[in-house]
Length: 203
Image (cartoon, rainbow, N blue to C red; front, side, top):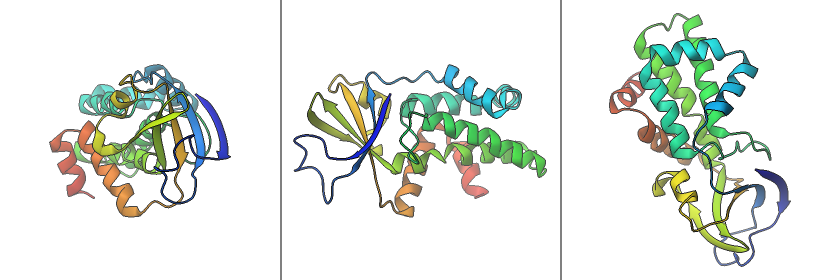
C-alpha cells in the first residue's frame, strides 16, 4: 500500500463529490488481501498478546470464526483512519478485541458470555476506521464507484475486476449514529445471531 496525504479529488470526479474536496489518505493496489494470518501474528507478537490470542481462539472457536470472517469481509487492506498509514484496520480491531478480553478477565469477567461480548466490542472498533474513510474504486485516472457498507463485502467489491486501485479519502464529519450503524452492520456480517444477541443483552 502506498500512502500520502494531499488535498485533491480524483480526476474527473467533480460531479460525484459533494462539498469541498476530501484529503487523500492512502492508495492500495489490487487485489486486496483477505488472509490476515501473518499480519495478525506479527501484530500480536509486537503487542505481547500471542499466547493470550491462542488460548482465546482455541477455547472459543466462534471467535476464531469471527476473526476469519472480518478479514474476509473487510480485507486486511482497509487502513486505520487516524493517520496516513497502511496499518490494517481489521488487524487492529482483532488486537483490540484480544485486549478487551484480557481486561475483562482481569476484572473477573470470566464467563463465556462476557468473553464473547468483550471480544465483539473490540471487533466493533473497526467501525470508526470504516466510517472515517471513503473508498473509491478507480480504473487508472477514472473514478468508477464508491463502496458503502450496504454493498456487502469490501474485499469482493474491490476485487470485482472493475478497478485497478482503491483510493481512500479521509472524512472530516462523521456522526455517532453513522459509526454505530457501520459497527452493527459489520458485526452482523461476521458474528452469529446468538453472539450478537449476547452483545445487545450486556451492552
